[in-house]
Length: 87
Image 1 (cartoon, rainbow, N blue to C red):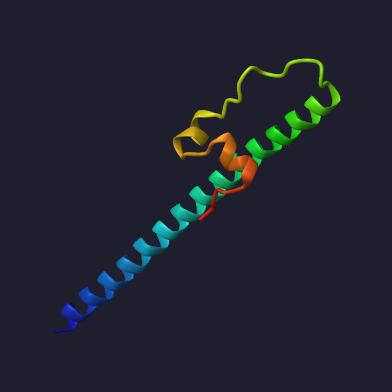
Image 2: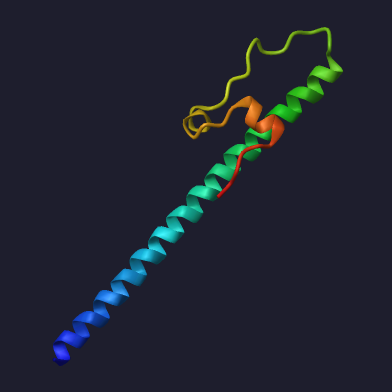
């Protein structure tokens, strides 16, 4: 009976640890996505400022996001209208 009790306590402890690990993974992913979105937003704002300064010179022919941003569904429209979420 004592060993069964210890087994149950260990099982609960392992489940808590597993939950903590998953929570940390999610938080890390959110931080990485937030950083990517901030970088992309900064680039867009920088391009807008440059286009205001040099309105007669053509900018890049098309907006291109990095592959990781495209994989999570971020588009120029999302960033410009700030309709994306960060967890």
